[in-house]
Image (cartoon, rainbow, N blue to C red; front, top):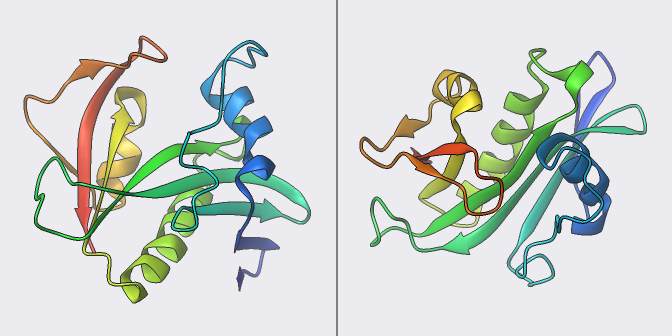
Length: 153
């Protein structure tokens, strides 16, 4: 858990605590669309929430995975990174990623990767992620443009 001067806190949470924010921000608040990953309840999955007071404003989940970039490295996949609309652009997502990265490094994780939404690539680049050239694709779930991204820890 980490506390910041402006009342922002990052902590591990149960995946179910993230579902409402995942749905609202990433799935157009569609109640018919799943916002759960089959790996959510696995012991090795890690879920982080960024809170302003008691209000969840950032979600991020990490799952053990084989890297599409460096398969020999110990790697986790980031999914369901979401920042509530009125909290975007204030650095909260970066704080959650920093916190999660430190924990993942302490567990021996060497790299993280994700299918980053093209609309969020500026954020990921600014926080040290790299794009995999030629990996652009439409997400099967959202039909939105994505690019494979990764970051060495």
